[in-house]
Amino acid sequence: MSSPHIPTIGIQHLDQLWFQVAGTRCNLTCNHCFISCSPKNNAFHFLSLKQIQERLRESVSLGVKEYYFTGGEPFINPEMVDILTETLQYGPATVLTNATVLKGDWLRQLHHAESASHYGLEFRVSLDGFSPQTNDPIRGDGTFDRAMAGVRLLVNHGFLPIITAVRTWGDEQDIAVVRQFSETLRSNGYDRPRLKILPTLQIGAEEARSGGYSVLDRVTPKMMENYDESLLICHNSRIITDRGVHVCPILIDSPDSLLSDRLADSLQCFPMSHGACYTCYRYGSICSNATGRSLERSQTSTQSIERKLTK
Image 1 (cartoon, helix red, strand yellow):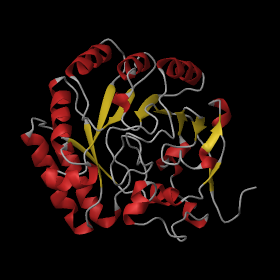
Image 2 (image 1 turned 45 degrees about the vertical axis):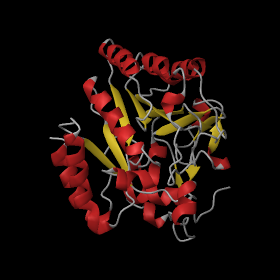
Image 3 (image 1 turned 135 degrees about the vertical axis):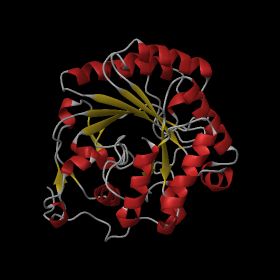
Image 4 (image 1 turned 120 degrees about the vertical axis):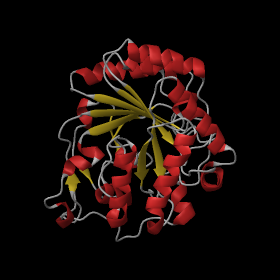
């Protein structure tokens, strides 16, 4: 039974379907990862092409409009190119990657698959600093140079990746950081960079790094009055893991996030009882490709810069 002190969120329509395609396996060990992915984390396992195909067919009758792939690092799944190629027969696809393991042959195949499809393929590249000095302490030694090599590969194969950076700097640095990101990307051949700034989620590895949520970091029923629920991913999305269907990509480690084995049975209300729900409430559109709400007052200026960068 739900508590009157905890608001619930219903799903308006299943617009986005996510896949935890690499489970919790990643070639990197980032110190802010909200599900603590690493080369040794086998809590969740790879999804196979066959499993993806079954879920894609299941999604058709539910009217899913787009598909997202995350991990871990999706491209350590040996079937990833085939999975994306198959998905482009159903709808637009977005893959979240650290870009450090990309290969030219894969991108040539994916460029051809996108060209032959009615739908688009987006890449979102995680890069948490505009230089080795700002990125590598978070993502590991040498990761900045490897990620930038991946960005150049993407651009050279006709893709315009969305660069996502978790906001680990202070408020007063927002505008300067976005400008420095822009300069770095342009100097690496990405003339019209696309940048999305993300808030930290104080769970997983980030909880150990900077502390978790307090008991006050919760969404209340009053906060949801006149709130645009479409800003929350749980309002229009679900995610598939090897265990079943979960409410959202952020909470897969939480036992209550597992809703069902079937997509149709997962379209149920969910209590917004987690600290991470508070972060989603504050910023909105964290997981989608949309810009989302401003990161408080200082981020409003940052977003105006981001808009200029993409023009």
